Length: 147
Image 1 (cartoon, one colour):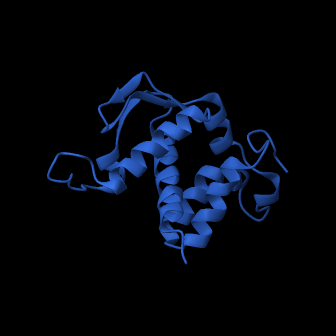
Image 2: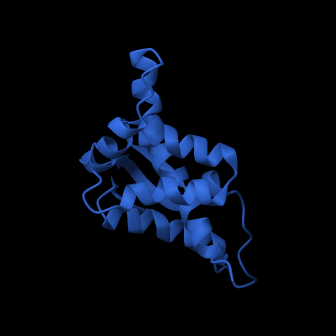
């Protein structure tokens, strides 16, 4: 049995982190709908489970120290959201084991970052590639582990 909610979580995490990375260091409003599209609430106005899962991923990333925000906008998104130092360093520091010495140094540097690995994983459409890239975010000590 596939854990589809975990695959969605990985996709949400990658989207959230890359969205904030692309606007860093400028705080931005991060909306669920911008990440996963429209999901109609139920007849009573309760947000769809998929919508709530993405919103919960945002809150979880904040609780785990990957991002900061000034508050939530109902259950629609986070206001004045920005990567924390931990999130920025994690996404922007090149990993030595991902370096490609045949490339020019500036290109090799950028391609060896977790931000680039997340972009490639999202673009590939491969669930396993995305899971592997996102799990690098959560490995113990991975924030400053450059091996």
